[in-house]
Amino acid sequence: MVSITLRAAEPADTATILDFVRELAAFEREPDAVVATEPMLAEALFGVPPAAEAVIAERDGVPVGFALFFANFSTWTGRRGLYLEDLYVTPSARGAGVGKALLIHLAGIARDRGWARFEWSVLDWNTPAVEFYRAMGAQAMEEWTVQRVSGEALETLAGR
View (tube, rainbow, N blue to C red):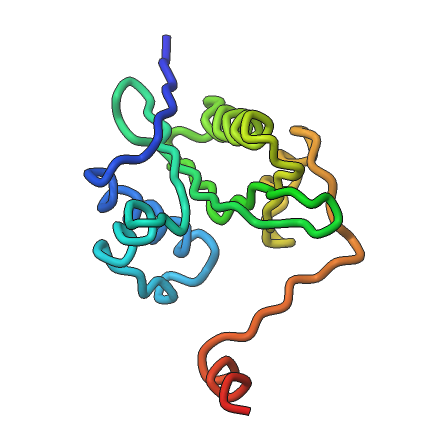
């Protein structure tokens, strides 16, 4: 019987999380896009105040996935929400309930903290993920699109 456990990430998990982030970037067809370093990630997760939190999923004591999240805020609800930045499960552990366990755990965190929402983005071509999220009760925000300003465009906008 396979045992899946979830726990809050600790500073000693930083290298593992960064490895998972790189694996996720490769899966998302952006293998060279990760510029984060271990010190940057450690500061983000364990600095004061932390910018984000992470949960490690282990199968029989071995890390097989993670979820990284942070609080956002809704003016409409007047409350915080949980924004899932990354969810990753190693290929060998997919189909074993790890992703489901992580989503349920995060929903519990949002509920227990009194947060109004649990949101995330998914690439439209990642059909297995989209189908999995629908099966878990997620609804697409069809009228909304993500907007981003970064790199040179961010510098230009900030310099206006």
